[in-house]
Length: 570
Ligand SMILES: Cc1cc2nc3c(=O)[nH]c(=O)nc-3n(C[C@H](O)[C@H](O)[C@H](O)COP(=O)(O)OP(=O)(O)OC[C@H]3O[C@@H](n4cnc5c(N)ncnc54)[C@H](O)[C@@H]3O)c2cc1C
Image (cartoon, rainbow, N blue to C red):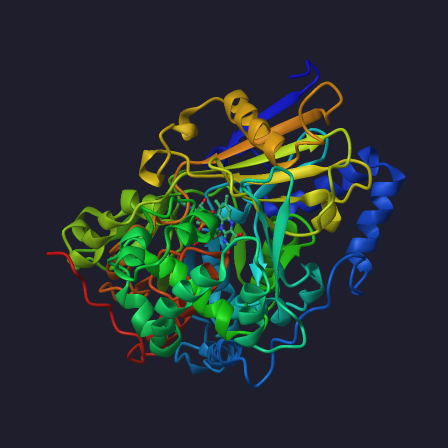
């Protein structure tokens, strides 16, 4: 490792960065003083251009009659708008809602409650918005992200949100293909192409059948047949497989082992940062079901810059401008205060201040929520079931090189035992673009025994993590990394998230709580709550919307259309 290599390690939970409203002004000042003219011009182009950027692909047509999921998401947005809580209130004032947590779920619930006519305050513990999508700048002005985040065409609520906020041009769509590194041929990659001239499910059929690098014809047939019930039985069949691990499901269905090695391990690591033999089969089936049923479902997009500025800030602005609400960072909630009946009376902040509202939404991750449950609620089965859910560890690694590696404008499944997916952000993302030097962002998983690794990487030093990542990259880029003449690392950053999305080990779905809770003035949001998009950005946005619907119904005196989900613990 060269001496000049600089390292930076930030634990996602304790990152030190400015408030969302302050980020932009300080960054502009930074940009003005630090950025090269080339970078500044590029940034300006990024901010102003709505045309498709060079190397990217046009936005897919998602708002079409055949896309039922998109239409359903749009209808839910409309339903929330129709509440008009401000006009319905007998007290002639907007009902107030306090949302705890400024990740995507919290911002989504606040955005849609604002649309419904409530006055919403969001309090976020960290110094910036975004939660697991948060990001901050290092001393050079380079962005460090909690995670490499990919958007899919099969994210109907997220795509509706982008349209509603009028920021659709911030998504950089990539070619419709899935790129996999070839395990036995270092430096070689193979792609599953989804041809644009075929609708679903034929485009996926073509993608699989026309690729002969990973599976033989016999293996493809032996894989296709057990997947038919997923197509015919839909969500009901998928949900029923949650008690089985990928291994168990494959054994029952006589699937060739190579499918696990070639595909399912890579998918499991990408979807839940966990090994396939630990993962619930529902996760794989959920993703495959969306990808096979929606023409653009597996199409990927990158945000054109950091998430706090490019996605969270427009949401916060909407909450404040449209709803007259408030979004505050660096404001940790210390305690949920309840009355003798267990109803929420207010919340106490870490600085001692007490905040009150007509309704409360927790958008904290499940591990944080468990720690903050009031004593009175702990014995209630609804809250006890949360003990069955736990976040899985994951590490996000950033590597800045002194030159360009073989360029690829899209996501790659590394198929390395240590790594999941990665992307060269100097190619994929306008804000991080660099014509001369690559910046790889890589998801390092599995990270500990619970996730399927023998090594407790989450406890390893940054040096060890970077060294192990570079070793793996020598296999992925054998002609470019390693050796005397190989590309040199300029600097690196490692972000550890010890508890990220809930670990989707078998049997967890039944413990995922509904947004509606037995507490009359308290609703849950968060990707771990019950919704069909697993622990993902789409899941977080949908959970926020569903929470907004429950809260709006309760605030308008209606019986929530969504009941409290039956509980499976005593
Ligand atoms: C490395 C990585 C890569 C990922 N890649 C993808 C991807 O490619 N595609 C995808 O769809 N998803 C991806 N995800 C998952 C996605 O980021 C999450 O599913 C989603 O962001 C979760 O949002 P959330 O709002 O439910 O939770 P969080 O983002 O965890 O937000 C919860 C918020 O609550 C705040 N909070 C906690 N306690 C308190 C308190 N006491 N007071 C006030 N605030 C509090 C937290 O600070 C946090 O901001 C990835 C995640 C990681 C970590």
